[in-house]
Image (cartoon, helix red, strand yellow):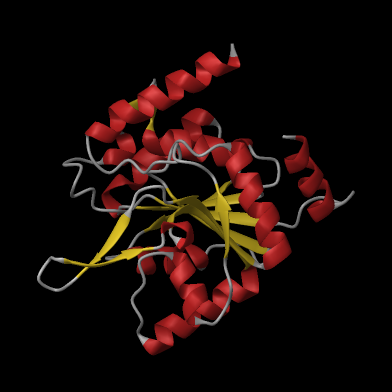
Length: 247
């Protein structure tokens, strides 16, 4: 913990952290979940409400842009008002893909932003420390992402479904969010992908395509994404264990 705060002080110095905006993506179809997972209750709070609240609580996050389904706009407005979230700058309608939704959110980010974070609304177990750890690395390296190093043995398969070879797991990471980028770099990477009509499944791929290096930041296995109904029970278990550790 002391090492972390030392890096925080080194990255930001005596001055305030650079203006940082976060785009929270809540516009997914929730196909695998079966209903709108963003509104599912986990330990007394909806998924999206919990996610927004964590970013709201981080001093170094200056503004929040929500990207939501068109039909749910009023629900998100109610969440913001009921919780008195002060940092929500805009609530934007999402698109057909994650990439389109992120680009729509980008249009509403303040011109003052020096860094832009992109986060999955369904990753409601993210913590302030995770966010700050990734932000520190982004300030030092221009691009950084939350991630978890793989511990399972990984096999590369043939087209027929047979093992081709074993992959060195020490080099493999499961990528999470937040993913944080220097603002101008992120804008350039987004524009380049649009011009080249390249489809991406996360924002790191935008930076990769533009030739930028991304720092992988170990944030552990608890930063799960709510995807299936079984994930709700796992999330509640993780939250319960966190509360016990704080006692």
